[in-house]
Image 1: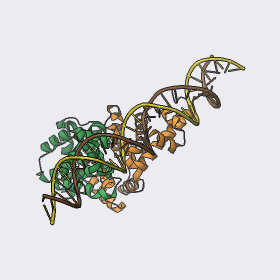
Image 2 (image 1 turned 135 degrees about the vertical axis):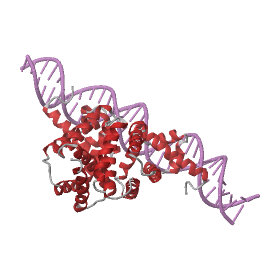
Image 3 (image 1 turned 90 degrees about the vertical axis):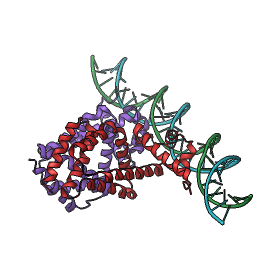
Image 4 (image 1 turned 135 degrees about the horizontal axis):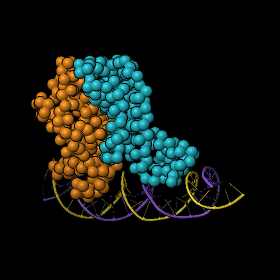
Length: 177
Length: 177
DNA sequence: TCAATTATGGTACAAATGTACCAGAATGGC
DNA sequence: GCCATTCTGGTACATTTGTACCATAATTGA
């Protein structure tokens, strides 16, 4: 079986990281064995050796990204609005390409029954970070919608603008307890 | 210039419709000149004649889909929760593939400054359909998040489940007026 | 130590794709 | 009716891609 040695495992994760970078730069169509291998600095055969087909590569990259995101949410203490606004602004503007790449991976999950668990855990992690309860569930949905809206339209473009939108969301959510 | 005659315009829209169907079936990677031409029942050269490159094809398909969606929202009278729930269930379960295809097109828009207007109008149309005001803005965000959540995780899977989620959203939104 | 497994890197090839080209048919304006 | 423009459908070709193959090196377990 491939990827059982320590060195092999390192190369495996290097390739998965490269997938995300390729995705950032050129979108889903740019993810090829050759592009990923070149990005990771390994020969083509290494990419095909560890991930026999492209699908395997993308699915593995999604699972890794999801795991990292879930951990990030889990570490999050229930923060203030200002802090969340800064984080969202950083995500959607500074690290925009990386976030888009993650969503593109998540969209691949829509076509694969086997990846539903990953998507489900992603959502649960966000809800838990917001504290649980009916209000938090609505807030999680609205925040997810807000992130997409910013990625699409660019607005709100400032931390203050995002904070105002978040204030509305949390005020509405608070009404549900 | 290409596509100026009536017959030419018909073929143009036939090709754009074919793009969405190809997208439904095989995702973004499946959209090639040949696949689209075959789906539309026209020779390869027709596809390259009306849309000289693949990018042109995808962008035009997005603009057309956006236009249709905006019109659909505009025709919508402010409906009851049950009606919205049935519509969302239809979207996310019965016509799931088509909706995913639309979102995949919208994600392409993220990489193109020129398509920001289209995305912006999409959102405005949804907000207007919900009635306007701070509450409606939050509701629009949450509904958008809800749609994605259903597409990803499959839950809620029933009309009743969706209705319950919507009830929470509207109750929260109502608190903002 | 040594044999078996795993990793490496190079090469080759068939299939698919974007794109260009062209000769002729249809169409439109005048 | 005539001519310029637009459209049609076919073909060809260079590139890129997935994938397979193989000889050799490294690593592991007993």
